[in-house]
Each structure stands twice: as structure tokens, then as C-alpha cells.
Image 1 (cartoon, rainbow, N blue to C red):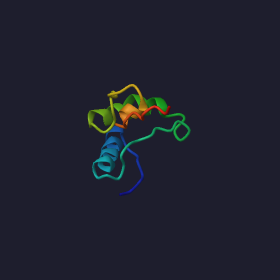
Image 2 (cartoon, rainbow, N blue to C red):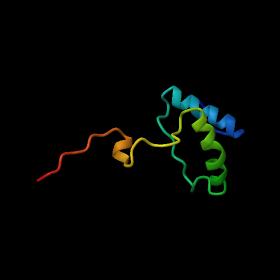
Image 3 (cartoon, rainbow, N blue to C red):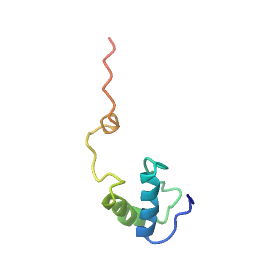
Length: 78
């Protein structure tokens, strides 16, 4: 797969979905220092497109990272 992402938000979302569904990616990080002038557009347009396609969460099941990763709570050390 080519790692260049350009085009409309829908086109970029389709490419990212392809990566997610083929196992080439298991998540996405949005890095403001890489796209400092386009972060608002990314959050307002690309993220919703990914959420509609089911590859970016719209909400989380738990309130902690541990819960959201499905990790067991460690036993307290005494």
C-alpha cells in the first residue's frame, strides 16, 4: 500500500479504512505538530468520516485507558 494520503476527507478516510481492515493499522493518532494548520479540519471532517466507517471510536466503553484496552485490573500489592 502507498502511504501517501491526499484527496478529499472521504477519499483519505477510505484509504485509512483500507489500512485498518487489512490489518496494516490498528489505530490512528492525530499529531498536531505534523498538521498544525489543518488540525481543526481533520477533527471536524476526517474524524467523523472515520467514525461513520467504524474505524475510529465515537465513544469509549470505560473511563480509564486500562478499561478501554480491555486489561484486567492488577491485584493490590500489600
